[in-house]
Length: 147
Image (cartoon, rainbow, N blue to C red):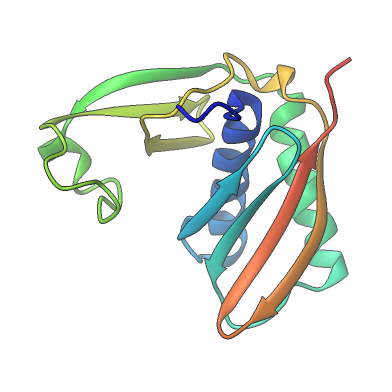
């Protein structure tokens, strides 16, 4: 993992992705850059979010965080994962057994990254900015340090 990798922020990225797909059926982000102090996710989209939509996304992500859901990994055969997940981003030569990260019953996604053990340790989620350009919706976010 990169030296500035942060499991809390990466876990929040998973929650944001599921929230965006549930609200807008846009799929998971196609590009992300996650640091301990800030992150951005890019989605294929047709417009910017309204401020009401942005606050709704933020509130829904915070509700998942507040639910203190367990975050855990399970192994799954690629043949079992193919109908459940978009596997286009898997690197060539990925093993036949995939690691799937589950966030309670809210999200599941193949992933090799490190994650928090529970959503309750993430801290408050805040969308800092959002913008739209050339078919790409960019969401930037931060997490408050947990109490």
